[in-house]
Image 1 (cartoon, rainbow, N blue to C red):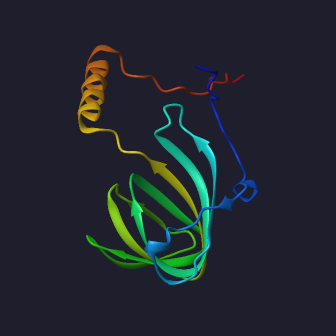
Image 2 (cartoon, rainbow, N blue to C red):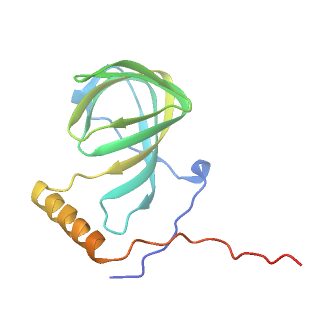
Length: 153
């Protein structure tokens, strides 16, 4: 395994976007054209961050994993089973849980930042929680890191 970068940074406007077509059978109306560009991936490859944009149209969307979105430009009206119809505008954030279907209506254009986390199988998730509890019970609590104190003259 190669060296893992300790920090990855990017300017949102510098993320290169490539065509990311919406499945034709999901399109309800219009001709939405989507693009996406990933700018980071976690070391364990379960979480990624990307920029996504889309032109006007209405379509169904399936969230296979948890996805946190922040609207950067434009707006989208979303609705689905288990949540009320809602407009998401610039600055709004939302969490779409794994295994959720939603209808996205993009009136003109939308651009979002997305943090996507793939689901971890149940047995593995249970094992990870158990290991975490064990580690917390064995290891001392982390200490806060603070700046050195300056002496007064």
